[in-house]
Image (cartoon, rainbow, N blue to C red):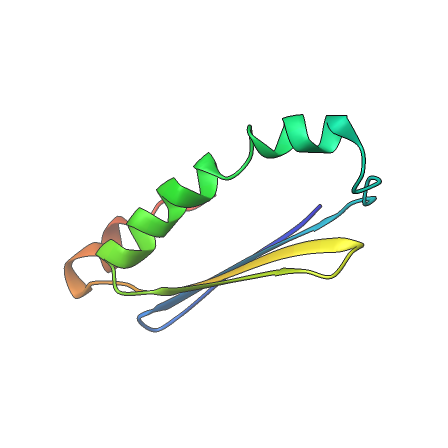
Length: 83
């Protein structure tokens, strides 16, 4: 897994890349797993909408990538946690 976080002025850019092996689409296990996926991204989407940002999701068969751009409100710039 690769995680990249960059802040430039009032823009926060966040990208996560996660390689994966695609399971056989005919597999019953894949169907069961799909029912458990996606809730985290729904929560992320709410935060992105709150700050009028954007999120792009790409899955090319071997890698899942989520890219997020958020405009940081002026009053929040000094309150961003550093980690």
